[in-house]
Image (cartoon, rainbow, N blue to C red):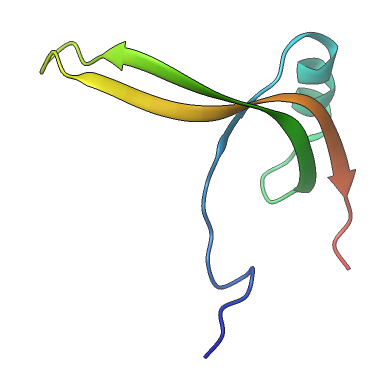
Length: 70
């Protein structure tokens, strides 16, 4: 059985700044279909309890388009 977009979901952290952040914050709702163009950014930090280095990757958005579902 083939999997499609509705069968599998992966969450990606996206950050936006300045005017773009305001627009997204005012209009984005849970479940909204969007297109994001931006740069990948990997952040390194140290876990305070274990003192281990941790990493996470996010997209720094420079363009967001709101798409309608068909």
